[in-house]
Length: 315
Image 1 (cartoon, rainbow, N blue to C red):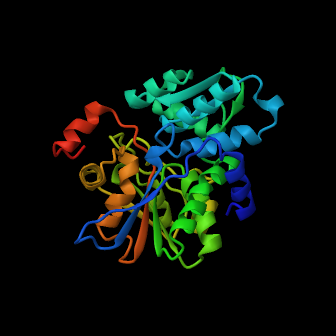
Image 2: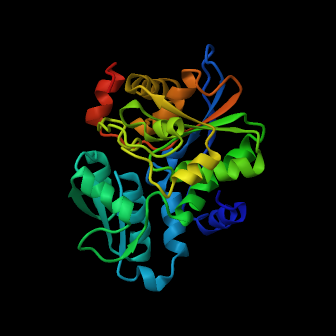
């Protein structure tokens, strides 16, 4: 786990950057639980990633970042790194998979970041090796950097202050950095709280790893749930995830699309696919019947994808 004092230090370090987001009740009469939404869609980049990116870059040695910043991201961490790079006057170069949504790519460029589109396997290799071939600079790992996880953990501190008697939290999982950060804070302050993860059935690597007791390859199919799911849990992240996750939930894309519609209709929140995963899992009864917090991790979705979903499509 990430030490609580490191998460508390991160909160002070990024206090002028990250918004303290609200915890809002999802009022549905026949819901299987008392569902609360942590709306990270309200961050300056419409995603939680600004927390980890800002903490990692601000806590790094200035000499290590003087040549610029690098990351590999489907879009949201890229925006976080580009945002903090612009603030510090540093160039930011981001490797993105070829299927990354245009809404996220346009946002990266608006923030001054340079986009490198690469095949999925090459992008995944950058995440595994923490380097981008031919590029120099401080590589901010989107998942496995302890400083990124500590920044993400500030979400857990806010949740515990707002709902100290929660029973469970559901967290969308991609690489696992958000999960480890939030779970570290919550388990430190309320050990009996359950930590569940949600990922698309089209790339449920953690679900498979939990069943097998070790990372295992799964078939990964790109979908509108582009910020979550992968073909394999990173080996470095597996021990951290196994320590804090009570159960990994695989969510059908049709359920996630329905959750996107529910969030839009009931609370007027636009969630991207990954951002709706936790709500989908909770509405399906997968997180129990108590007080359940769902992390709505981001809202960066192409309108071309959002419109059919709002009209009833399954994604």
